[in-house]
Amino acid sequence: MVRAALVLVILGSAAKPASADWLLTPYVGVVFGGSANNFNVNDLSDEFEQRISFGGSLTWMGAGIVGLEVDYHLAPNFYQITGGTEDVELFDLDSSVQTLMANFVLGAPIGGTSGFGVRPYAVAGIGLMRASLSGADDLFDNLSSNELGMNVGGGLHVFFSDAVGLRGDARYFRALQQGDDGGDDLDLEDFDFWRATVGVTFRFGG
Image (cartoon, rainbow, N blue to C red):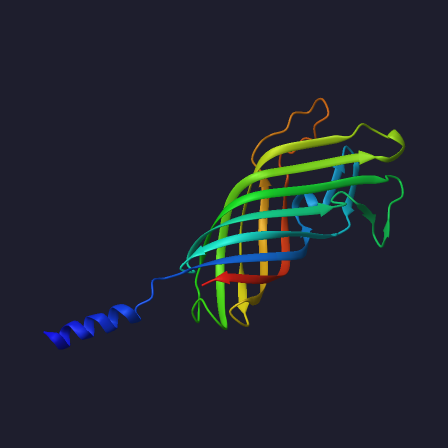
């Protein structure tokens, strides 16, 4: 009985409950596809120039498998038009698209949740999408729209230590509300785009 009790005490002291990680990831990337690629007004059609975008996400991962994420992203000059190899000077636009999403995350910590390891993951959620557009020299009134949107995608974390790693990520964004065609609002009907990013992840806890 004494031996059995000692074994139980040793096993109990050696067992560690699954811990949680906090992941902070600043990133840079590009937007492409959908509304990020095409400009169509009546018979005028052109392509947008791909611009660098940036943002950051804060993720809580319970035991490294299921988690929650808050992601903020800014794409300045979202509506910058290009005519082949050079910018079109017809429109001098000041524009941006911002997203703030609350997401569920499902990950698979290969190699554990500490030290070197690889963690592929899938992510999906909803949040706010804000688009704004203004023209120089009072060409037209400033336009903006705040709509409910969604995002879905996935990526891969590669950790080199307990604290630092790299993240590659690709997501699809789409507006869920149809904007009105009047007033000072942009119409975000069928508004969608893809975003690809790479960032440095700082891991806390674990």
